[in-house]
Image (cartoon, rainbow, N blue to C red; front, side, top):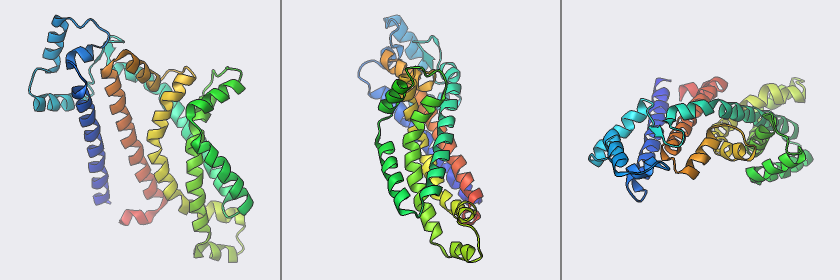
Length: 294
């Protein structure tokens, strides 16, 4: 257990360090003066550039700049947004609530729909074929197109969270259903299921109480992996449905060349990805006690 926890912590630190390094490199590889680039739409006067170089240490050696950048990021200091005239942490902090509600609702819809589809179709030829076709269409449908279609069907009235969440949940739920059904079919062919059935346990109970738990391990892994796709999809969904959130702010920051906000959104996504996958690892330990001994 201790070794497993240590490995997960080291892996999380490596992911965050890699994201910070890539963000730092992106800022330095952009053509032109980094200070003028960070100023974005603000007047890039020589005085403003000199002041920003001094504040951020952009006139220092590159290793010193890198260490300073990582140190500030570790303290939560992501710089200043010249578009919003506020600290980046404040800008993102005001928008993280709507994005969290959207992604959590989408995740719940995807998990519920995938579980229902897998339980109903696993090991049944015709329902499996129909469900597989629907899942293939759902997983390959572009999010922005699905959002526009749902908006059209709703008469362009989407004040609540359900249509955006459904738009975000369909591709994720389709992939999750495929993985969960495969896991269920593997479990249903196992000896312990045969033993349960010979004891007279009903098929519905066999699926829910015995096979589903064994099928959850690969499904949880996929669910953690899709955390990144949910965040990426939130950028599109928040723009299509004109919802507040980190994704919409990131799009506006890209258009306004407000790079501190863009970098902050990337680092925030990395932190969320690490946290979600850590929670998934812990959930796997709860679902399958055998993993605690690995």
